[in-house]
Amino acid sequence: MDLKRFSAPTKSIDPTYTVGYLGSFGEKDGVNGIIHSFKEATKKMPELKLKLIGYNSHNKETKLELKKNKLNGQVERSGQITYEKVPTWLAKCDVLVMNRTNHEYSHYGFPTKLGEYLATGIPTICTKVSDIEKYLVHTKDSYLIDADNAEQLTQAILKRYEHYTDFNTMGQHGKQVAKSMFDYHKYIPVLQSVFDDTLRTRN
Image (cartoon, rainbow, N blue to C red; front, side, top):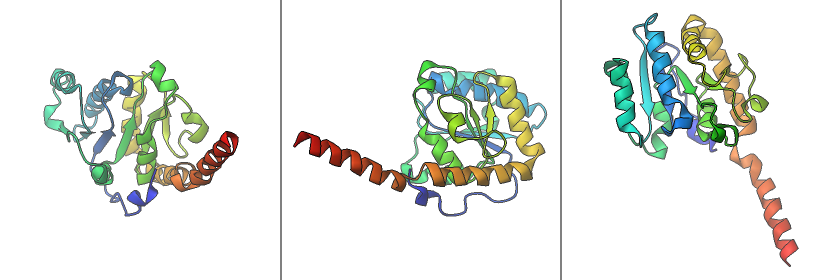
């Protein structure tokens, strides 16, 4: 990923009480789980807001889920946004959620949005799927939860505000992980070497 997109300061120090999700809205992404856990969190923190960011091919289902949880007034849905707008939208949030479910796809893919989340320096909550735990350490550079565990997600959202300064530090550590692990410049020599070896083999 291109870290220069996130080089500007992306978050004020004061809370906006906004939880954010950006990405696709497939079953594997656990968006309904985010909605449910957010609803539970609002019982203790009614000032919370939720931003669902990105094109939603399951818009009708999401609307029904929001209606069922009586959340339409507390949730903003961006619809499709441009690549350039991603940092701006993420910067509106205090905490970012990646809630991949225990779906087969989740264990064989790595979400691009996670690198973008971390690059903002905003604290990130993410489920322990695929290779996540090879890159991230719980409470050091992210807050890790079990997949398909709504209670853990609810508690993680609340803890973000109960331990605001600690989570801010965690977010900055996450940004360092993004710089050291996910900067595309680091992988150009590797790819170039693969291409060179392939050409030599063909010749």
